[in-house]
Image (cartoon, rainbow, N blue to C red; front, side, top):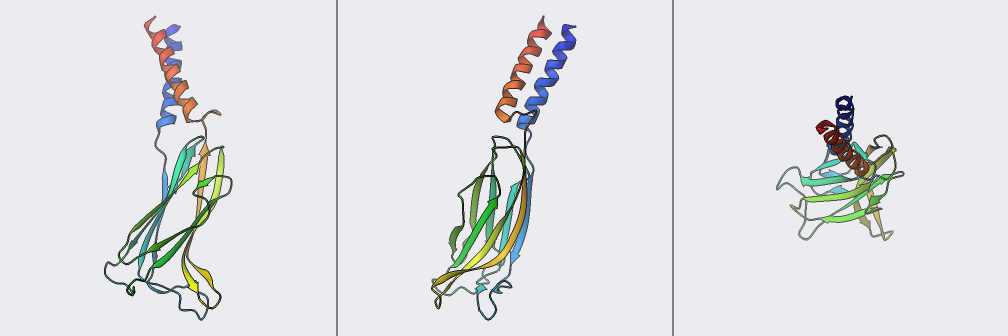
Length: 194
């Protein structure tokens, strides 16, 4: 009888620990932003990309309650040496991730300058606080200064829809699952020895 009960505690402990340490899946998308006038530019404008860029966006497919994940954007020139950069010119990149219901750090729009030959990596932290499925998007745009109106004009390059599922195990997060798993293994060991 004690042997059977010890096997129940072993299964319970291993299930909790397995769930707590199982690596999460990641979704990703790669986008090519062509050089030249951008398709999303206002009609009649000459807003253009100064080089052909390869954009790689990745995000966690699922997170455990209480866990933190990352949304990452990597930007590199697709064709080295082939660009339309003038001396001292920069490409202004605007990126804004949003997930309804999940906090993202840093929040809001991020603006960075890309110089000739520069690769760039940007990362946002997602804090999974409550169970559920959270849909959102990442807007990637190039910014251009309109001297006539004295404003920055964002020209969309890509809008990526994303979804992150936050899960729990029997109402518990990762920390409690680890604790329950260790207690299950200790009880298994105590019952197995007796």
